Structures are given as C-alpha cells and as structure tokens.
Image 1 (spheres, rainbow, N blue to C red):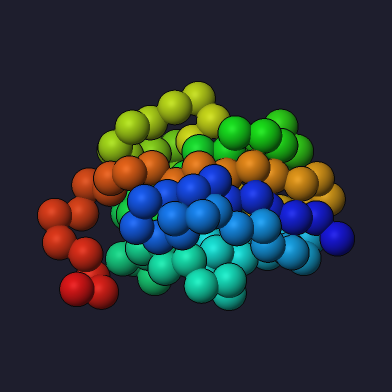
Image 2: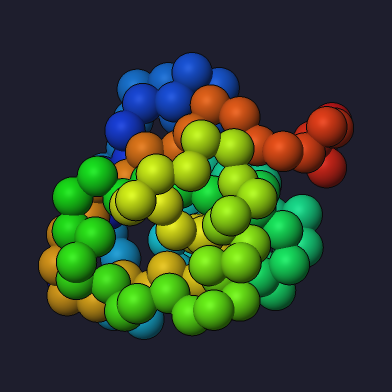
Length: 112
C-alpha cells in the first residue's frame, strides 16, 4: 500500500504526517481523510487551484496532467515543475512526498 508523506505546513499539519493511500485515491482525498484541511473551493472539479500541491518525490509515478489541469495550474501561486492539483493527481503504487504551498490565490478561505 503506497504512502503519502505530507511535509510540515505551518497551519495545516505543523508536524507533517505519513498517510496510507489506496491506488486510485487522489492526494486531496488522502489529505482530507487524514485531518489535513487542504482547501478545495471548487469541490474537486478542477475549476480552481486551492488544492495545489508540489510532489517532491514520486512525481514521475503519477499519470500525466491533462490540458484542463495544466491550464488551472498556470494560475496557481508558487507554481513549480512538480506542481499538481491535489484533486486530480491520483496515487498509483509508489510512495509520494508532498509539500503544500504556503499560499493559495484564494483571498478568503472557504472555511473561515
């Protein structure tokens, strides 16, 4: 069973977390199931960038992003070559190391 190592994030998971994942689950779903309140303002429909993550290890094991995801990622704060939308990036069989960026382009959090 693959694992996702979420690196420490000042607000969402200060100590980081290692989470078990099932193949086919998205990074966002694994984060939410493990108490990491990663924003997803569009309710996982690939219509925003609030679930933007950077896959530090295991990036090449993920299926390639499609054109819609790439177009959305172009709007993400802190875009990097290993950036993905958590709602679109599904775990395969390899462990991942994921960093949650410090900011999103949301002016106000949906949960505050």
